[in-house]
Length: 239
Image (cartoon, rainbow, N blue to C red; front, side):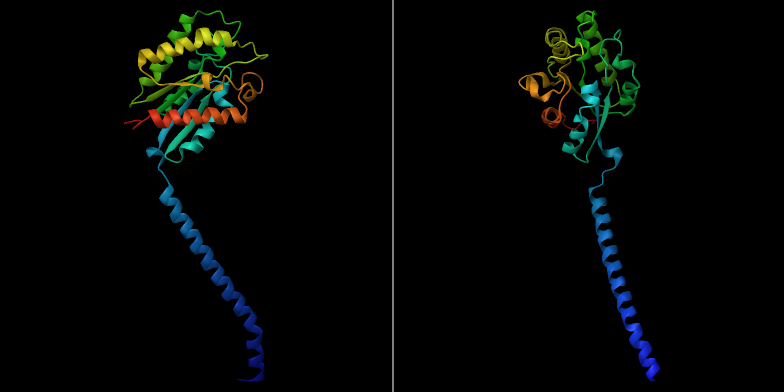
């Protein structure tokens, strides 16, 4: 070996070491990526095998964050979707009947195994002049629409949270005297479980930002109760 050859080899040594280090780094990264990929396969659940949960409601569903909280609590075996429509009501001659909304049609197309219905707050408007019989008939029709879907839907009815002082024209007395008894009547007639969000939150006016809509703390408390009801009452949903 000539002196020039020795010099060239010495110059190449740092480059060789860098290439070796780069090769090791790529190998480590590739191994880690593969482990992560294989791990994700172990936890992955096919959408077709997930339990579909439809959250039906007004702004207390659409904007409270409870469906998203519920998804986190139930985990990857469930697919929770938010079908809330702000301002919607049960009664069909109201300004925004829920059954006239695209969310209602989308909820049925979702083919849910579990249906959580929390409506009635907007039916407790001070200016609402429909009879309580209108609410009962529309409420049972709403339930029938989901029971008529293919499969064995498990339906949970929710007594809406209380209404405190507000500028929205909503009245807690009307809610307690008209709406909630109709929900209880439907639940008894159809043997459906009821989640009493009204009783849970009546002692917590601090959980309502405007007297009607839940704060984050209120939504978490509400979600916990929904979660308990789903895991306790919905056995083998969709079967």
